[in-house]
Length: 459
Ligand SMILES: NC(=O)c1ccc[n+]([C@@H]2O[C@H](COP(=O)([O-])OP(=O)(O)OC[C@H]3O[C@@H](n4cnc5c(N)ncnc54)[C@H](O)[C@@H]3O)[C@@H](O)[C@H]2O)c1
Ligand SMILES: O=c1ccn([C@@H]2O[C@H](COP(=O)(O)OP(=O)(O)O[C@H]3O[C@H](CO)[C@@H](O)[C@H](O)[C@H]3O)[C@@H](O)[C@H]2O)c(=O)[nH]1
Image (tube, rainbow, N blue to C red; front, side):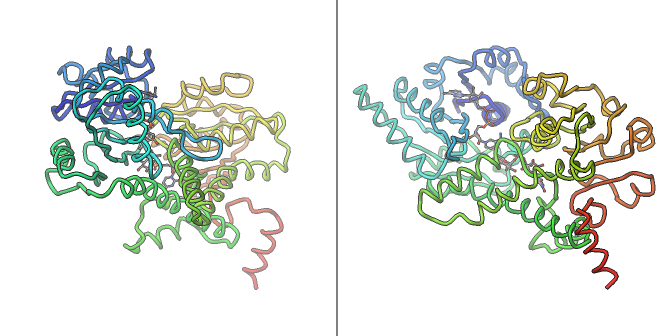
């Protein structure tokens, strides 16, 4: 099938490459000329396991093409995916200007019937608004076009985007006509062989499904982080609690890892947009707001812990940071919790030496001032002379490090762990002052709480 994909970011590029892999003839369009140029030569600027090889295979097979010519791209496919950005506006709502711009290109250049598929995450009602926008543009240009709007939200996770697209848990399709359903079923047939993963529904339900999925996942994270805070204050261990609740199959082990808050390009933005949508619809959004508030607090947790340990004076101190990307296996720094930490440390007069296996270039572009941030080539090289080690992202190589080496190189054996990678008892045995998240007595409680805790234990 001939397919056009607008946007060659994490979603558009992966979708285009995976569709080309199964035999579709795909043209991927982006307004970023430099990106198009590099992609046409098989150079992928984002880090996503398996993606670069897949793009090169698609190019070599002649089934994947990149262009910045919107006319060519609009005219190519019988199905056109919109995978452009939908960033937050100041009031939290989703900025749909990139989506509407694609609609304008459709109205300007398309002559044959077309399925316009929303792949971007867009608020409920966007499908209707997009249809009205295209109709308005057509009317203005005195043109006629037969087109349908389909909602087909994307659920891929960064770091496993190719695998998620090849084997989706479900394929949600919101549309209105049987003929459209048949085309979408044909398009996704290679991904739907072993059991039927396609869920057809109406447009608005499909749009809401995407936000509800992210809302549910974000809620799980803020829930466990709130319980982690409680565990700290009560002298309980959140890691035992996590296992204890995860064993209940109704709860499960997924997405209940406590940490230094959720980040990335999706959860924070989509939670804000969902809250905005609820407000616009005069519905309550208390739960969603609480999830966001808890997350904001959680992102400051590491800094607060560090500040408490050094009694509020961080001037002249240096911190070694492991992990900058918002999660492992990506180089994405969008809304990464590490950024909250770095910026707070700098504001308090400290400097940072940091390492991340993939996000160094992105970080360098964001924070070029070397007097504040020194980016080093290995995890070990950030340690010499640093006052403490801080862990923001749970990359594999950080999970079993050489603790003797850490101890030798740091000024003092102090670790603040935003991802609970190590066993507190073993760390104490090794002579570390170790501060994880939600692990009872190891969490550097303020003195008043420690006194209360000790008193309540001996009572
Ligand atoms: N990143 C994820 O993990 C993920 C997962 C699921 C859904 N989503 C959603 O998918 C959408 C895209 O996300 P992303 O992370 O791929 O964004 P991105 O910023 O990585 O990529 C968007 C791309 O669209 C291009 N673009 C902008 N306007 C354009 C236009 N008019 N025509 C063609 N290209 C245009 C940009 O140059 C950019 O390359 C968002 O709505 C996001 O919420 C993202
Ligand atoms: O138990 C957990 C799981 C995740 N996180 C954090 O949550 C954030 C998001 O993680 P993840 O969901 O794995 O990454 P994303 O790539 O942002 O994917 C989410 O956002 C995408 C964009 O909408 C959706 O498509 C995916 O289904 C959804 O998982 C990261 O900062 C993680 O560190 C935790 O703190 N604890």
